[in-house]
Image (cartoon, rainbow, N blue to C red; front, side, top):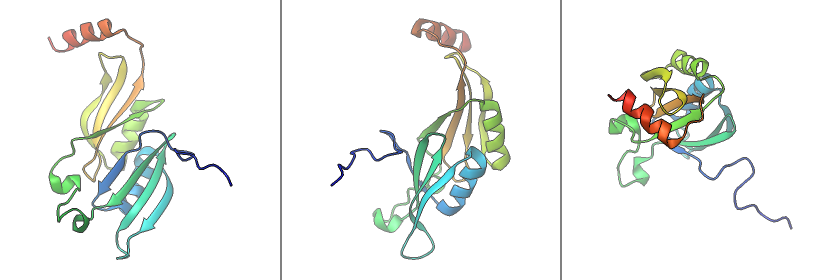
Length: 157
């Protein structure tokens, strides 16, 4: 009998799991915006929502499911219904300008335009049409903590 791996093949230690008002539409958006590949889709018993789904973006997986307030004490966990998301999902990519433009063209809203940042990344931030926050970056410079602090002081002066 084969040994079961504690971390399944294809997964990393941390995997975001998003609650979304329309997970099926979100999968299609993530395909257009971030080049996601659909890995799995499990429909809910009602035949309308998804109990579980997974997409792969680059070398990472993101789990998602529709909102099920009936399983959460009647409370929604959909960021659009909550009015915001306290979490940002960060993507490192080869060309953040192109990735950012692709996401905006697919329907994401710009929160912070792409720019060179004091910590050495080219970076921008978006909100997807489902209320989740994303940042996209390309690392440009390796800086020491001291250089980052000095850059921060200049940026905020």
